[in-house]
Length: 244
Image (cartoon, rainbow, N blue to C red; front, top):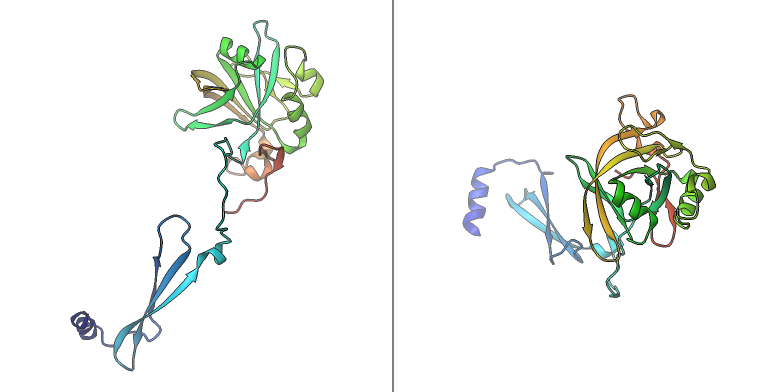
């Protein structure tokens, strides 16, 4: 240590008195460590050498981390979840709507989405037979229509008629778009994965539609104008402002 100090002293003659470096040293492993050691390296002009000041920070107080957790049984407690209205058609071309929350992007190139449906649902049969569907992203303005389409079966009810939602022609698939949804993704089924309570349909996005009011001056989607909502197991929730 003395040899190292001597080398530093011989090489550094007149550093700035205020010069310093902060180094954070974790005390424990893991994403959220309970303590963090902060080391400040600075120049001591009286003794003409560097000195290190070490302080310890309790990260649980800074980050609001709670120390106690209770282990529960395995569950699909992933949140927030997207909520979408998926349209499909029967053999005669009659459209149907199903509300889904177990959905997500599964591939970027080519663009693909996955939707999980119980085999007993009417829409499962329609999508399985036709091999195509449309993912319509609703706004918070139609939360009641969205909830309704997830509670009744298309076997007995014409959901477009009862909900007041408006079908619009798609470009590359038979199922219609929903006018009241600002974003619509036309999809063709590429694969079906049997899982358990649900089967996963993987659809390639073959055409996308976006309301012009959601586009900025560069033609990019401005998500702040989407009035989107999410589903968190016990109901629908509004999405707030952008953080970063």
